[in-house]
Amino acid sequence: MRALVCLWTRVKAIFTTSTINREIDEELRLHVDLLTEEFERGGMTHEEARRAARRRFGNSLVIREQGLDIRETDPAGSSR
Image (cartoon, rainbow, N blue to C red; front, side, top):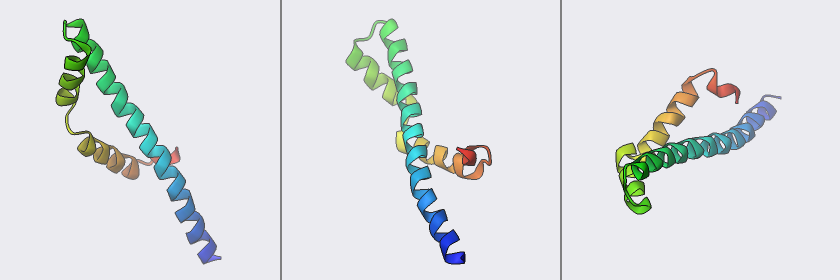
């Protein structure tokens, strides 16, 4: 029985992790898109605005890891 519980936990973690990764990717993309639009309204071309948005937003890998850390320690995030 214990082995089944352990197996189920590992299988569940695989699917939950991919869902969380997709959610974080979507959220990061949304923020960069919003910044891009803001810079375009300020007069930049789309390419300039996209580069500026990525620069302003920062290192997406670091932000992604922070998001994963928060979701792992936040009981509300674990219910997703």
